[in-house]
Image (tube, rainbow, N blue to C red; front, top):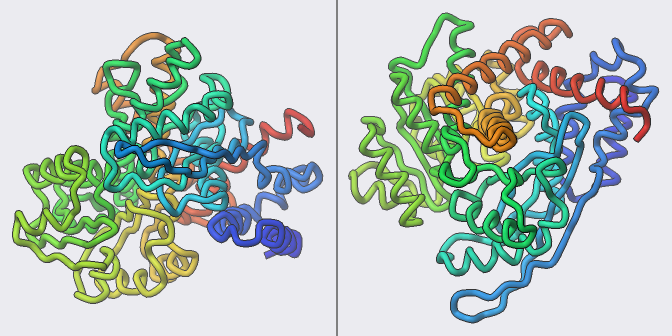
Length: 452
């Protein structure tokens, strides 16, 4: 690694002390794009790296709200607008107790390059609040979402910043957020994505991240003459992404044997069929239940307090493909080694940066195909971009049309990442290829705009 990159990473860590996830993401991207600096000296001369790590703005605000029982609560809200070189800021809102400035910056930084890979006109941003939706009823969530939007509305717009959902922000929350935005600004515009199909949303949007992940995996496997048929697949999480990943894997002939939430992991050696997947959707999306209830109903293994990757390590569970769809850094070095030892040939990320740096190193050293989140899980933001287009056109594409566009986008991302890796001397390295391709697209736009 060049002294320039090393010194810059060290300086960024010093300036962003305590923001571990953000610093991890920056280091991973900058180390990957080192070959680009030699080919394009103007990037260093014009300080593109120094500029791209600083968000255009970061908004932090108080969110006071009243619960259904009359209690007053106060949370902290965030919106980081990172880079709009390619289009309006675009990225989800996360409601979770772990949310802080460093988490939001990491997510927003990743979003810059993920959105660039889709080739759609979207910049990078992210937001959220340190609020825990777990156990909250509809009145609680409506009151919180309205309080959050009372501040957020002044910073967003269909040509400025278009938020979406993320962890803790699903269809219910998007409805409450958009309803209040529409009331305050007296407009019906495409300022949020993930809306219901009857009021400006796109077909396939709920499924998009999960479906797109599986389409990407299919492309990865095809490079080795393989497909998903009869492959044993471990999926983490039990929310939107995990549910639709499981659905699409099953449709394509794979066998999904795990899901988890923050409380426990279930292992179903027979595999999740359509009936079981529909039960999980009802359990998590409507009943707001816990995944251990699946084990109670279907009499399968349940490991309380363990993640999917803990279970694979402790129980020696054989898997062909691992699809982490829960949260950042959920797979550490020991988990990665357990995947290697248990026959895993492919890891692709449905969550944002779910593998630690040591874990990704182990994948590569052992010849595991590795699809990083900014490429593999770009299906969600891709269909969000298509939702924006439909809102602008005041038109709605069919399910088949949107799914066809999603397949083509994921195939193109796969091709682009592989091509960039090959061009810059890192053949087969999806992580390097995705980082290089996404970065170059943004950097060239920034160079064209001058120093702004």
